[in-house]
Image 1: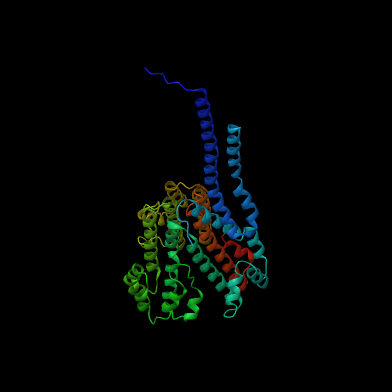
Image 2: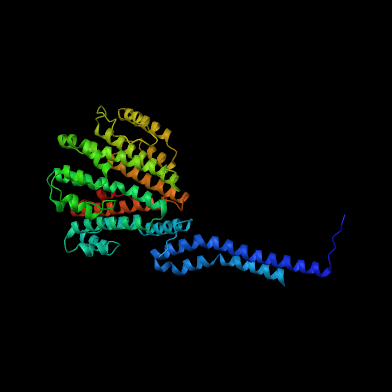
Length: 82
Length: 352
């Protein structure tokens, strides 16, 4: 049975690659989750603002709240990469 | 402009708009304040509310309480038309079907007015073009020379067929009551068919339709009992599709004790709001009080359903009904104040 061997350089390169994939997933999935959350909040915010202009500030605040999830994803990505 | 018609976003958008509009409707405290106002102050208050545009538009043609009444009706009609335009996808179809009852009301008003020989202007003043038949179509129907011609030219052929079938009897008996029953039976059958047609969001709509039929049947039951003529044949007034069978309701018309009526009615319903309303009917009350309680139960049940199904047809239906009763309340207040009724008397007729 043939035994596969791997050089140290190749192993290190693979580890960097996995980290990059992990970082990408962290940001990407967090972004998709945020998008899904913002879809409902955004639709409701636009609806509420259409009826009452005074709600714009509050509606905008609620719409951007899920953005924090992307920041969590970004933090994880940065921790993985650096 | 591209319109987003898929996914939950359009439902969320419209539901939120309806919730905001509902929150802006007149609250109980405001009605109580209005009860103590004189007619001029009340008129000024109405003019400063959401009805300002309609009051301004109609002020050249009407005055006094007539102006208020017409402004209220026009506002309601315009509001309903705007909601149909706003509603997305299947919600639009359900809303159109639901508002079809205004067509029935308008057509019956025209027919009754024509038979009684009222002028076109007087009939037009009480029409609310909130359904499929808009103001232009209703105006055209009003100019027709006879009731037969009105029915012939009616765009809704199924409704025309029902009217044609019962017209001669209605003219002979001078009563459109039976025709009205037939039209409402057709209306609810159409709603049930639409709700059970497998369309998205049909289930909450279906549940609401069943509840509305139950309320209508219970109201009719208590009306018949209040008239004290339970021996009259009532088999053709009950609307099918609700929780109660026609035979059961017919039997309850002649049952002497209220307790037995309430116990039988309670067995078939699950809604705690309706059960509570039925419980309070154990003691003898005037029919307007019973109707008021049932309407309140209906509105509260709608609120509950809309909270359970926040992004469905329910918030829209709640708003449609609440708005209808706001207009009815303001109209009652205007007419009541003009007639000099005491605020205690008026309060009993308000749906708050």
